[in-house]
Image (cartoon, rainbow, N blue to C red; front, side, top):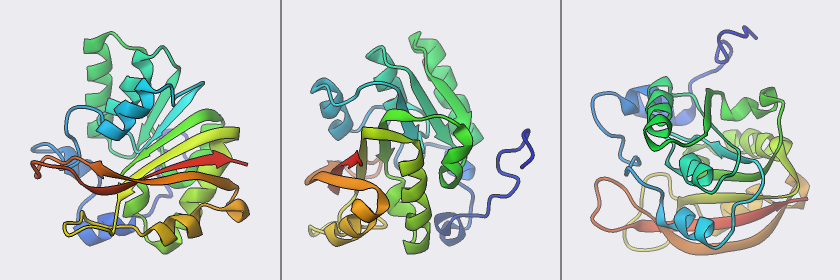
Length: 213
């Protein structure tokens, strides 16, 4: 791998292929639909309940709202994304808010290259963009950077309810991806919501709480 280009061997994701544009393009020329300018209520609630601890990784951090939420609690946090435009926006938010948060370009399918482990890992809307083959790789990479006993939170669109977001995920798909065989214990999978810029209300979601075995 070229150390100056962490994506020298990265192939376009299934989402990028379907959308016909890169993740970075989503942040150019206007706000991305998932970039609501504040933490998702589910993660804000988790933070208020003491659900974040230790070193935190925000996988697919976008413009950084969840990483900055962790930083506001005084926790060491790393936000990673493939979108340079989003990372620049996240760094500017950190500077404006006076928060210590680290944001780096990294591939969620190559997390072992970080050379670090984390007590808390956050995934807001990344898992549900993966096709079945990508999920296998992504879940293994999440396991590789989560400390034993550490916690992963996955917030993804749900397939339940009359109105669904893109890439809806079933409960069965979550349990198939996260289990003892892949290094995880399911603590809870609860109905929740994801807010977007194009809905006045939240869309049905799952909030999965997973423990690294």
